[in-house]
Image (cartoon, rainbow, N blue to C red; front, side):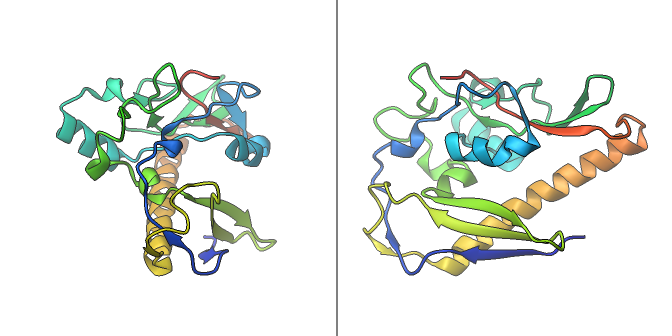
Amino acid sequence: MPQVSVKTVFRDVRFKCQRCGTCCHHKRPSQFDSLVPMDRLREFWEKSNLIYQTNEDIENIRRSTGRQIVDFVDTLFEYDGKCVHVDDGNERIILDFPVMKSKEDTTCVFYECGCRIYADRPRACRLFPFRVEEEETPQGDIILNIGYNPTCPGIGKGKKVNKKALEKLVVEQFMDRSRTVATEIAQLARDGKIGKGAKVFRTMPGKRE
């Protein structure tokens, strides 16, 4: 098993959300198809801005709003609580992580002159304007580098960011997703549904720009 460490790549910074909606516009870059190969994942991360949701996020929003899951969750496959699928004769492993659905103007479906689910917003929203880049060492270990978007109007305002709390949130999110993916892939392998040499892809569900 690879070792996972986390590192904030900035000094002390102040942040207070201005509720301006800048981060509530989702970017789906047109140069990518619905399936993103892993060798283009870094480029995809740099050009996109999607709000990924955990199953816990989805349940919290469903319960607090009374909305149907299909109203606010985008996935390439029909959402069934699982994120790993196989396709093309079991030769493609597709990681279909649920993202927040967008309106025609690319804003979040819950944005209307401000966030309408602020108290129950997904973990990814709570992280913004901080972003995580995964770095793999020559030994195969993983470093989670936490940076931030300097254009966010909330940077420089409010209290100093608690780096330890931020790192804890990032590690929890990464480990939760990693365990889920590992468990689902292991089950598919036991069922003989993953072909030898199968390639891994990520999805870009929903409408593109």
